[in-house]
Image 1 (tube, rainbow, N blue to C red):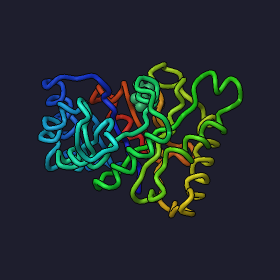
Image 2: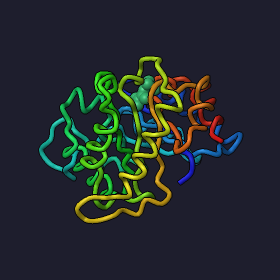
Image 3: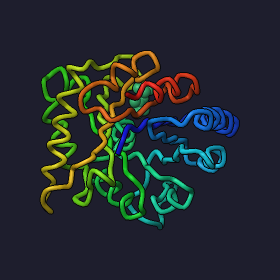
Image 4: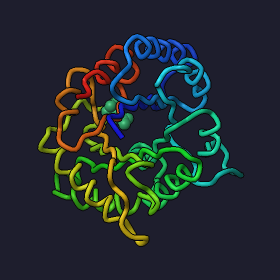
Length: 251
Ligand code: PEP
């Protein structure tokens, strides 16, 4: 896969914002074909509005989470199957906010990513260390545990995306440096190829995104880091101009 810029709107937006933001980005994508693949991940109730606004463009739709079951008695949850039927190509799983707010473990994240693959979606599996884990020098151990525990055996470089999102850089304005990012991306690439109980994975073409306060002003430097294949963007994805600066910063 080439570069991917995915916008995670989190629990923000409204029908009006969904329509206006997605329409503004669609107009930009129509005017000049972007080099990067683009995905918009709005809150589930806004998927239809965003889907309608991006129709006929190269912009893809994504969910922010899915349940690990395909259907059933899980009030408030959304299945990967339904996301696929709503026109999604991607679904984010294991975002640090879900790991924290909903106590999602690596095992749960892995089951969600498996559900995404079953449904024909590309899971964007998030991993990343907290500030205190970083301070105590545990980054590599945390990344190893999360990648080994959260990735399906059936994941390949062609059907799965990983996002490295240091928790200390999410929504804080703190951006990681090349020295922070490059070694972790290299570690993820190696770990992914090692695979799990089912053996090695086909890691060729794996896209590893960076996420954490990416914005128009720092995107070029981040996207030029070795091993970085795109960005998962939170705050800046709610501003069409800033988000587009990130898209056009892809080398
Ligand atoms: C995110 O939500 O995945 C994220 C990286 O947020 P922000 O860009 O706001 O730090």
